Length: 125
Image 1 (tube, rainbow, N blue to C red):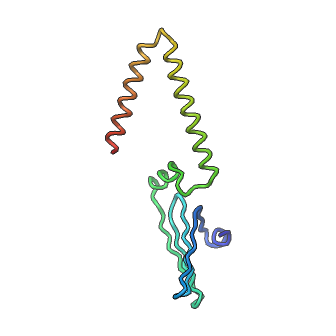
Image 2: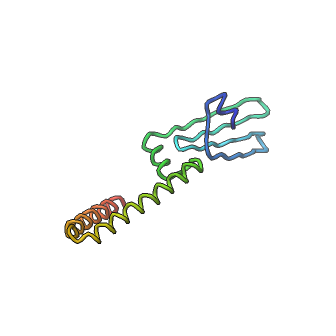
């Protein structure tokens, strides 16, 4: 894999190997958040074919957001940021509930934001 990266600028996080005995063909499938690459090694002909399928910007961002075909470091980073966001939201809710002076305004903002969130979820599905 390092040879493909250094010589051909081909990299992927998840990879699969498949051997076709009849055609004497090795197929390597590399997947990354930004695209897929299929490399076919024809052993009898001493030939290599490379098929690259790059994704667009939105597809790449979607894969990174879902941590699909990413490294373990990115998965741990996204999990840690999700935990921090949950703590931030819960502490804000706690502060809004214990502060009597702004409880009505906070409740209205909470109801409005929750309604907007549920509407967006409904429209997405």
